Image 1 (cartoon, chains in turn brown, cyan):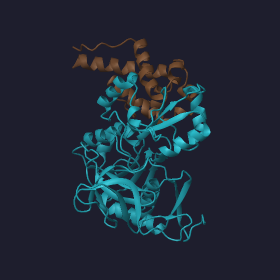
Image 2 (cartoon, rainbow over the protein chains, first blue to last red):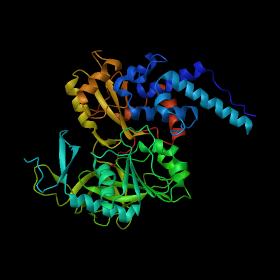
Image 3 (cartoon, one colour):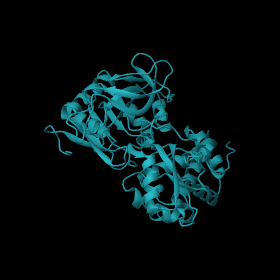
Image 4 (tube, chains in turn orange, cyan):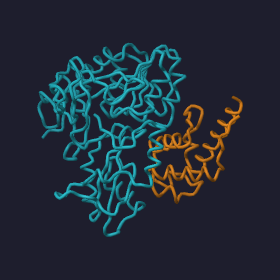
Length: 100
Length: 356
């Protein structure tokens, strides 16, 4: 039985903002949950920055993004989607741990 | 000064020179072919397809994403246009992956598919390997997969190579390629690597390539025709294959944004291999990070923008005015987060050593 506590969505979103704010600066704090990061951050959020975000999020939440199974371009387009994606991964992991 | 090929069919490759002005280096088709054949014989072996994740306007991408497949008549799958999209290839055909530092994040997800190939080689250049590199190499241990790293520059072409091990570190020795001559330092001495080979490029305005070329890399001897990389003699870094002279960035910012004091700190980067942080003091209170980004973008043109901006009350300097970069470490607020990232990615939470 897994003892891992899954944070609430809002907590996950706050943590996503913290983690990506360290990388991308103030623009992350002022971006709306559903605002495209390409709009909030302009050229700063290119493909390589998205890969960097993937790497940071993986490290912060202990998950691994599968570029084949996941549509990273979609999932990492807004802060809200990143938080949803992370939440889904944490829930899946908890289910697998419970099965194990 | 001529900016035209001296020989028919010479091909230009641009670098940012030490003065900051772009410099063109010309290579003959014979030199390109010689390098492809040399690396194919010593590092790659027989492959039936190339998956290129390196843009062809750079020497590395041109050599192994264009010239090698042309030389051996094999198919190419170009996957360098969008680094977020996983590349595809033909199953059952031995493959060469042409990789930049950022390529490994995505390739790691493809380990099961790479494992199905009868043989695969990943060739890496243009910056340090990352934690993702080692994760993939580790995941494919026991499969017919090899990862090889090239050491070189636009001016010299490849000068040395080494296998990438799952537990590789910067101290793993490099072996000079067979057609390269180099004077390596004695004992534990460190010296800038000076090389000669038939593959040195010709600089714009010169009639011929130089007889020798001093690289910006400090090395230490590690046995017969082997060396270890110690660090950079200059402030040149490579951001996913793009050269970036940190001194030039500081000069450009000082010229374009008078009143702003800026210092660039090199950083190891989990995706791009190397990157930099711009630390700035704004005594007149004219800027904030939001207004700075577009100004920096305009000032720096094609030079990679910093990975992050950090404002400090002042830039500490020595009595001669030199910035005391060791006093510009990570801000207290991010130290915990940085060490957490380092612990989970395996990347050092410090400025790393650039590499050609």
